[in-house]
Image 1 (spheres, rainbow, N blue to C red):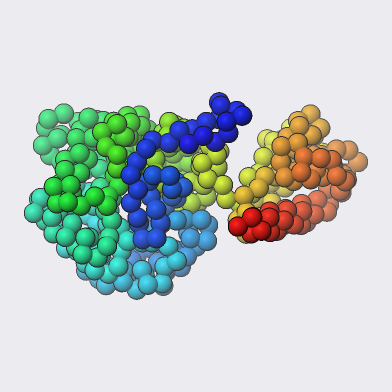
Image 2 (image 1 turned 60 degrees about the vertical axis):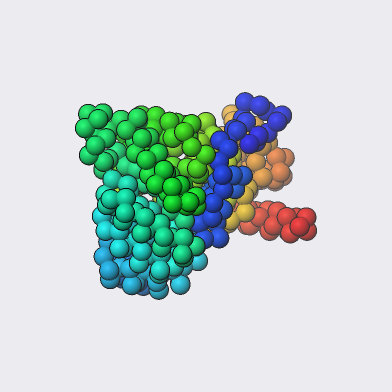
Length: 373
């Protein structure tokens, strides 16, 4: 996919994959890269789980995964699916019956791990249930739960073992004439994940779900995921992503979108360009940006906002953003609209004024997009 032919150094050419459907969300081919997260509530607590799904969807999640560890969760899943605004992926481990029950409950996709779902006969039963209920499958290879024979063969989790695991399971699906599947090859080690994903990308045309599993807390996990997923996406690999954080699922969605936005692969909401601040700043940049991030969360329209503390880089950054504010002197700064200096505004009033300008610009862009349809 060429992002900007005028600037070829920004071009990303996505790997050619076939397209499947996860509910009503297309995955692979030329479809937008889907952002996923996973609930961390007890699935049997339907109200709490649905609330978390809805919050994730509001933050921009295209697909949400829900763990189905027992029969009670399978029963709850039916109600969760009914109330969810986005397709639900059922996370299945150890017991193949849960996969069958999840398909019957209306899950849009089953995530199964070839290392712990059971023998081939049981996998075949899950495949039949998926086919009967128009449900796709994600093959979820994980370095921490590889099959025993592969660990014996390779001595330890390695890219070759993960790719072989994935291809073995792909064969089972294809031998059963089932092709509505995507695949992931996750590890907590960035190097191992990246190498495994490159290997599987070369070996199959199946859509690929990206993730660095068990990445860590909000800060460390974000950095690890940005490095691992960012490099793979830059290479054109990846059709869906999940940022795995020990944090609120909404944070996973936010980080996922920020990774995609930084590469120009998805655009949603306000992209704030801000300086780290220094002694030259004409206002409190850090506090201002924190407040604006919170105040502008409701904006879904893709647009850009620059918040720069002084005139060293402020005017130049504002030239390339929809709305901008550059700190000046005497307690005021310059507001830029569509890249041009527009008017001065006091620091005391700047936040409310910037929010108003962003909302106005978003409405203008939305109207123009609607008129073009």
